[in-house]
Length: 285
Ligand code: ARG
Image (cartoon, rainbow, N blue to C red; front, top):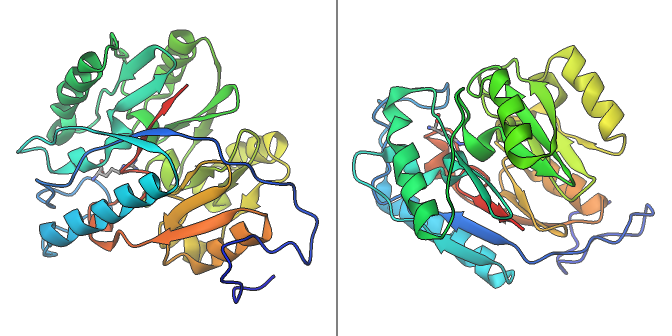
């Protein structure tokens, strides 16, 4: 394995890795026009740290451009004043096919985002429903192949997992998070393709780690330094993996596994406890 390969092609010299194929994706993103850290609802947020909103916008535009350059489409959601976390579009809900479930947020500071995302879904032609229990959308609900991995422990209620299974008619696998720094599933686990995931084992209970090992024997296990650099908060099209570039070790692991790592800098958005995946809601076909 080498990091000196700048060709953009995966390094296949030292191991036999399967070919990784990209599928064109449809994403939604909300610009950080009103982004700020005005309250602290996760350990990454510190209200005394100054936030450069202009810089956040520039970094967000870089991510937006990256998706377009990879050939994907991006729906832009209108940001609303007074909702500084709305930039974390992944939390808006879960959309698969013609079905849309809108979030029910844990913290009152984010509650009004649910109606904003519901309006956006309605404008797009969906008839969004919500859950009786709390669900924070794709922060905790990650489709992989025909199943949905569902996080709980900090934000989404385990009871909502059953509601999600019923709403989409899919098998849902509950995974329990234990470390407050990894408070959403998408901070500790990245879906790379229909059968491959990467995750940080210490973020999960022993039982969930065992479940993950059984479900994904070929998973990429990511270490502390990369996980704490938010490396797993990544978005994959099956070949290209857009990830926070500070997670250099994860980039090497991806390349060794045949993926094409695409590092981006979203350091300003990290002050709110989010990065690439948090800023991206995928509309699954
Ligand atoms: N400040 C936001 C919160 O704590 C960050 C959300 C990050 N989103 C994500 N999908 N992990 O709710």
